Image (cartoon, rainbow, N blue to C red):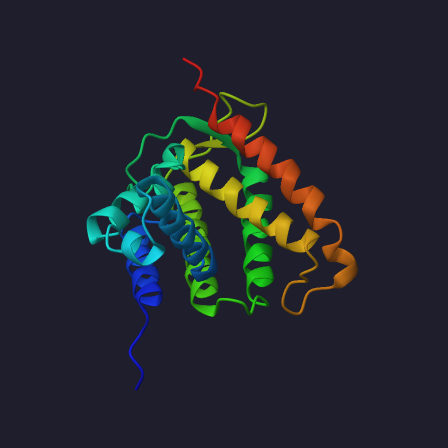
Length: 211
């Protein structure tokens, strides 16, 4: 069996470091980021790419992973959302639409073929988000103290994660993907519906509970 290349091994290391912080990224994206970092180091230090690679140690890759994940710091990567402060009021009726939307995003991801491992991780991540929504919904009694309809309190970070997932779904449909066994005509309206809900989720995440 042929030995794995330096690049493939380092991509594995970077993906593992990102995963340890509670997020995922595609193998292709990790490879592009690694190539850019090698070239950057080579240019800055006036050395060859081969020499630049020697500077990308495990510690350096861990730092790259932190930069990637902390770009989503408002989503509190790796945090236990079940015990996070629940300061965002969300109508129960709207939550039903959000859960359905996450289901559609999973169907869309199921037809991706470029990076099956990343797709599997992403579907699992979204399914876990759905699970959090369901558990948090059943963990409290809906009240009418923020909207004029029953609502529950959720962690803002969870709403931001859901928004990012729906935004991904909108991007994929606009790129031409149709969900697994989905109706192509019905799929045409998904991007606008997803983006409308994304805006609402991010607005709700920034609101404070009434005294």
